Structures are given as structure tokens and as C-alpha cells.
Amino acid sequence: MVRYLLVLFIAVGALTACARNNSTGPLRVGKIQMDIMKVATSQRQLEFTRRMARAKDEHPDWWRQVQTIPPGQPAPYDPRCGLTEVEYEEFLALTTSMNVVKAGEAMLEVRSGGENIFVFDGGAELPQWTGFEVNYQSNLVRTPLGEAKKCIRVEVTESVFGEWSGTEWTLERGESGQQKPVIATFALGTLSSSGRAVMFYRERELGRGGKTTVLQILTFEDPRR
Image (tube, rainbow, N blue to C red):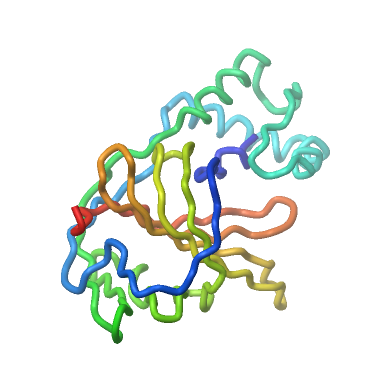
């Protein structure tokens, strides 16, 4: 339902473990022009989402049922969702056909933190990326939540980006005080259709009703081409 819209990066393909290496991937020291991408959402989708958000408040028992559905799977139609059955089928079709479009441009400065270590400075244009560090020596990425050390190589055949391949680093933060447990993923790869590099970071709360926060999706020219 509404939660289904947040499953933006469904990866269908091969996964393999990372081995430590001295590859620098598509990153290079210097200022890199980034295309800022966003998920394209139609007015029709927005209207459906608003109506289901109202239904969530009006029918909390229905929403509790929705939370039991595994992430990435749509819930079966329920008249309490605020849509007709025909509209719900249209909503699912629109959701599964999402893609990304260019929303703007910005410069990201990449500095050297040592051999094959890249530190980001987003400046005024991309401040949320400042402090990220991709460390190919130790095969980890430093994120706002800490060090992402779990590393996999991915060959993705279905996603909002289309087909792409690359590397994902993941960390999990346990529950602490009022903070819910969170899983964070940093991904860096290459788009099959254009050959451009793609980079994104997301944080997803674990448990029922967990929210997903996606930092800006960036694409840039791969210097290896």
C-alpha cells in the first residue's frame, strides 16, 4: 500500500560477497558534476497515496494488517484502503513502473583520505553527502550511522534505475532508547543502459511500519569509460 511506494530499489539478480581489493571503482579525486535524480511520481499516484494515507488514519485495524505483509509485496485489495478495486490495480501498475528522472545538477568534491580512500565534501550544494567515506583498502563505507562493513557485489536486473551492477555496503543499528533499529545501505555501481555511474544511500527502519529515507540519488560520468 502506501508502504509499497517506499520499496524503490528492489534488486532482482545475482549477489556475491566482496573481496578486499585495490579497485577504486568509478570514483576519482576532484570535483565531480552530479546529476541529481528523483523517482518520477505522477499526479495520479499522488492522489491515490493521499487517499490511502487518509484511510490509514480512518481504519487503523486495516493498517495493522498491512504491516504484516513482507516488505516488497503488495497487500491484497481491501475496500478499507480508500480506493476501488480497479483504482488499486491501477495504483499497483503505476508503482511497479516507476523510474528515475533528472531533477538538477550539483558538484561533489571527492578528496583523498589515503590510498584508495575517498572522502566526500558536498559543500553548499550537497551538504548531506559531506563526511561520507568510501574506503577500498578496508572495504567499508563510513556513513552518518557508522561504518558499513557488510559488502556484496550485485548484478541487478530490475530496479527504478533499470539494470545496473556494482557494490553495496550495509550496516545495521540496533534499537537504542527512542530510536528504532535501522539498516543502512550505500550503493555504488554502473547503469547498463547509459554506462554512467550511480550512487545512493538509504536508511530503513526495521519492524512494522518502518520508514525508508533515501538520500539523493546521484549519477555521474564514469571515468573508466
